[in-house]
Image (cartoon, rainbow, N blue to C red; front, side, top):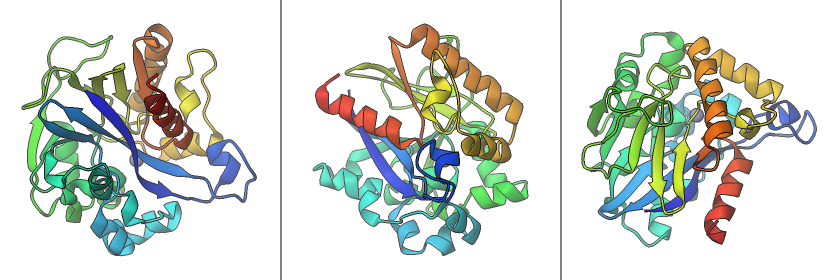
Amino acid sequence: MRVHHLNCATMCPVGGRLLSGQGSLLDRATLVCHCLLVETGDGLLLVDTGLGIADCADPKGRLGGPFVGITKPRCDPEETAARQVERLGFRRSDVRHVVVTHLDLDHAGGLVDFPDATVHVHEPELDAALARLTLPEKNRYRPEQWAHRPHWARYRASGEPWHGFECVRQLDGLPPEVLMVPLVGHTRGHAGIAVQGDRGWLLHAGDAYFFRDEVDPVAPRCTPGLALFQRLVAIDDEARRRNRDRLQALARDHGAEVRIVCAHDPVELERAQAAAREGA
Ligand SMILES: [Zn+2]
């Protein structure tokens, strides 16, 4: 299966070096929305969706003032998954499956641009997004993004372990080379998505970590701004840290067999895109 690495939204929050680890404190940092477009033998699969075309047209209305004020999304419709799929020569209707790491607004915005796709989701995440029990969850989950009533396919973890993680072995209608790996903490049902592409296993860890060096096998570290941010937005910070530590161990013990990426690190995205271009 061929895997494309797409950036489906760019956010430019203040915080400079505290977030990105480079530049001055006054610089704006750059956060991307790293999504995967996978060519399966039977149509396209999208892993996460970034922001959608409607979000770009009305960011405050659809995403809420606090999110827009803090993260300063660029809201360029050309960055949406829908437009990128078309630029690659496909039709939007070729995207028959979407698998989401979670349903935060910067991951679920593009769902509405693929209304006929089956949306595969870890069941505790769908329950949390529909219930919106707490104020932070009212802000992070936006019902407008699923008002079109997607065809949800929901899963609980079961099946054989994968590199020490519990996982869902088979997603309905998808090949066995696509796995859902629960990594809760950031949200109640957050999950990583593993894809065995033409270059081996790739684990999209979503928001289980934010900075590339957090899973460095030798000297893991995070910038202070992103460390604080992750702690503040986690629904269960202990579970989040435990899962991040398991990802570090995965990188250390199985780095040759499994590449790990997260959703928002621009350098990690560039490296993945360069490796895909070079066939590495
Ligand atoms: Zn996110």
